[in-house]
Image (cartoon, rainbow, N blue to C red; front, side):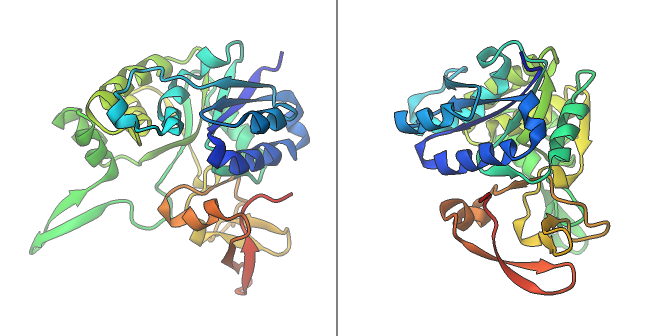
Length: 299
């Protein structure tokens, strides 16, 4: 049996993106030693049949934590906010689990290796939404003079999800951990603590984003160990991407212009790309040109 596994989830609307993610993984010879497993949150029988030819296993995602129907509103894909905290339950027997959102694709296997390496010794391996190329990570509402009200994603989500003021302040100014790509060992303590915090978040807050704030609290408040990876391992600021003509690949905008490991179309700013695989993006090259590129995986 393979030791490591990469897992993702999709419904029928995200099938095309999921299929591209799988293809991007399988383009690398190294993937032959890594299992690929899929959680089904509304795929059609035809889609599952096609995927089954490429992946090791497909299982139906459950609501592992009970959520009221009025919060779900038929959006079964929201199971991704819950089921990713229970990956060893769905696919037992692996040593290391790497989750990648379906709206992402792998550009360099080095990033995969970093995630697996980073989660050794029972650490969470993850990147943050803070990077030199990303710009502002906090917002401030200027009240008067030099006084301002600081607004942070972690603080807002912690409060809306029912966590105490003390916990919200603990995580408020910490780099926001992006749970769209992460790796954990099967026996890591994080699973249990994450599930505990997720139950609190789902009880009081919205489903969307619950798993993310729950993990941020797991790391920053419960103080479980973490290995924070470079942003190029989970690159979400698509407009900041650069193209290196000499290597024909996507890279960071600043020196040393490291190759992007995983391209992640997270957020509303990337709706057009997610919804249209032929969408043309204007991308700057390292030598100052502006070129047209389709950024979805298409090999």
